Length: 115
Length: 249
Image (cartoon, rainbow over all chains, first blue to last red):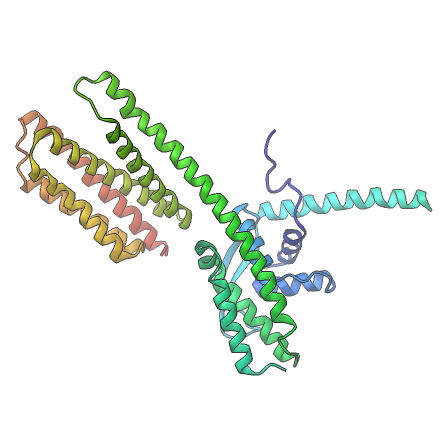
């Protein structure tokens, strides 16, 4: 059986949240963490181990890439590595959201019949 | 609220914990992870909250991730070793099969084992260095250098054994120069470029200065062979120089 590309394979919740956080622009590790927390209204709390482990695998599969090392003007004067979503990452995010929409449509259909 | 001393202590402990990641992972993400932990500590400080709730969770979460990364690393290393072992076996088939057809090629079984170990060690060096370095020019430089070094070492040993001219062992000094250069350069691209140019220069010098003591047709073949090796060492040096100029360390 042919191996699915990164854009076709279902994403783990951590990868989905990281892609979502990067979909609006480049961010450094702490920035991704805060964006994930904001996107999930505080429900998803990602530690550095999960975050950087996921980023490592996402770089390997071409979903994200390191973009730059620079100072964040809103923080201190330390230089931070920024990450950005790739074209393949964007395609994977869109495919995953489409899958979610499909699941939600099915669930809503059943919910409507059930009540 | 945590004091500065407490924050510093937690950061030092976290830095120690990060040392338990596999080296390639630590070198790539260790700084970012330490920085993120620092940012989280600062966020707590700004919110005038202590670290005793955050730190144990982060330490636990990172410890679980360390176990996962080490497991992945070992499994990938195992796969690499298996692939290199199979590749070395495939390459060993060349002398193994050739020795059946070439007269006077009577290697004992031990010689094949030693050659296999040599193939395997060369392949593992390339695989491990290539895993660490993402730049194509660095990987290609390592590949070409290993190929040329292997060819030089092999041909020198065979010619010395066949001809009984121990002075040909001088050619091995090229490899000694390479070994010292690699140790001094600590795998930095710029240092490796200089090392490879040095190896090319030493080989060219020995080829010119040292009398071959071989019949003229053999001497010509040796000169051509050494010319090719000088070109390969130089090409490898240029690849490392390219990697160095591209900012690869």
